[in-house]
Image 1 (cartoon, rainbow, N blue to C red):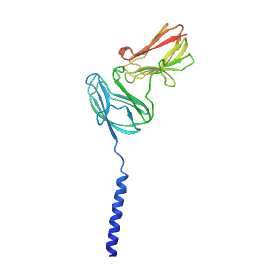
Image 2: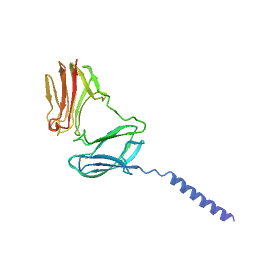
Image 3: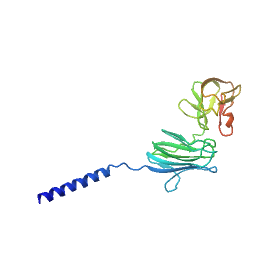
Image 4: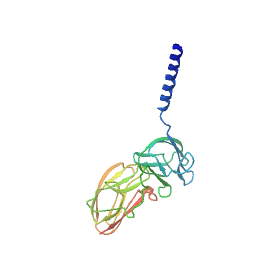
Length: 232
């Protein structure tokens, strides 16, 4: 009787130990599906095929299908900046950890027409403010071209510049790709990096009168461009 009781107790302990280990097993990652091409389409969907608009923070597995040598899939957000190559095609699997915030995905060669966005956690979707940052000559500015098919003029705090008051500015130019350049055109100012150049330069830009400041990548002028209004 004592032997049977000991055996039963041992079996119960093994069962409980197995249940404990089973409950401690890590949860599987949620899976998402990204697709770009073959036409001018780009999407991010869940396992049920529904477009992703909001996610919980955490780690996700993303199956990326790039079906065109003219497009790519570029995912950007807090702690994430991953992209397929433009000439490449095929499937990739990414493991991505999303934090609370706003995320976006786009095709770098066609960012205005092939794009999407979603939020993670309680972050509100980002919306245009209508005019962007209005800056004076005291504001430090950064013009970044590349490494993908993007070019942007922002403040040092990362806010897009939409209006500049007349004055003399120092603009840090970051040219991050050998297939792009950075070209700034404004009344009385016209300067560019070379396409083969990669690095950083600081330009002194004097804006003497109202008008428009334009910035562009010359080899990809149709998609990599922007402008800023100059006011008094």
